Length: 220
Image (cartoon, rainbow, N blue to C red):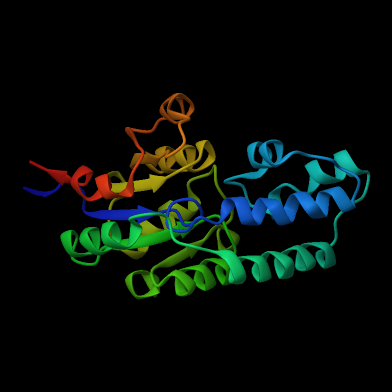
């Protein structure tokens, strides 16, 4: 058996770390303070997988209040405090990353739509930074964030790998769309269902346990 890809590119939130409920809980609270009432489910549906900087017009539309840099900075401060206190890794991800890193001779990267500080802080907190250091890419540092492919194209280019020879690991329709647009084959992590939407977005395979992932990267 041998790897069927030349590199594996991981999303961060919801793939490496279980951050989305924490981040969206903070966002929901802050939107409530602006007068926009959302349930946790509604907030997750609207904002998971998207960069907040790209959603300020939507928030302003529903609240009647334009968001400045101070509000974004306040959100990031409250978000970071909550993540520092409560963040945990996705189940079975440590072994999966360790095995995939070895299988691909270290040719893995983290390509996230989040800001770099958040990504690096999270990877350090859950003990995954050693696998990704110097190979972390942020959608805040590319011309366009997900669902556009820019961050995945940047990661593949930095590894000197054709994106068509890369596997992308994602968990949202937005992220799957970005990986497909980059030309990669996308494996979608969906521990709580949602297979149909991820497959419709172009995912090659949907799986429910990170323990499965290393074998999905192998060609018999």
